[in-house]
Length: 137
Image (cartoon, rainbow, N blue to C red):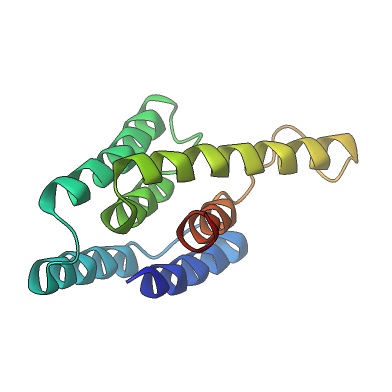
């Protein structure tokens, strides 16, 4: 299931970089596919999946409160990663992606590649963090 999620994250990252929007239809289909796979093949427990989705719910709430400083799509993506990573691992993915994005943002600001008002695609950092957390650690 991790390989499927990596494929979806790569596609969504490309969309985020190119268009600054992601396909919610692809996200919903992915969520349905992962839930059905977990239910039919008993890959993960319901508690594991729900605890993982809570991180995505938290990101959605933060997105709403901050008027989408972090996009709603990022929250939906954390729901996808949470279904296969679980609560603690998904929280680690969130922290790693924020850490990587902050370093990239500092680099862009220090070397005058952008200004403070420009937006930066966050999904590539989620993808890198998910791959690192799922396959390396």
